[in-house]
Image (cartoon, rainbow over all chains, first blue to last red; front, side, top):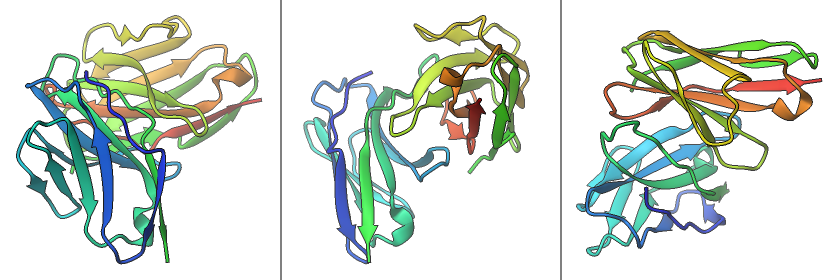
Length: 112
Length: 114
């Protein structure tokens, strides 16, 4: 699976949009971009995934650049409960073994 | 989304004892379950992949005789840490998926070995 690069940490203001970048310049054509988050001392939680089109669900929006070498996760109105480590992962969907390789992630702190 | 549970949520044991951690998919049948380990302030590291009814596939560097994995049914996988030592203290997380689809994670088990 392709390697991803994320900033180690970022602060966000409560109520404002949080934009989390991810670089995946070696992504292959059949690899999807996944985002998970992990709140302290809990298991990871799935947020969203996409292949090349922008995606939106009740939690977040995912913007993937046209060349697919980077993406941005947008939390439209950050709350204190969004404080967590956010992981950007690229992998082949429904692949044998279905492994998820977690990098360092971005530690997001939402401040009042 | 699908619910995955783990039991126990916390366990403290003496060095040299064995500890069993259960991972259950509560509302779906999981053909594949994964076990991860996470040390403080580090990311999740995949330990092994287990498919129902077959032997687990361990990642490089993970001792299969120390971390015994059993996936006897489509809703239950167990991880047994044998002869635990303080360096095995960690946060153990399982996930479950159906036919290579999305992974759903359990809440984790914090193991402390004294």
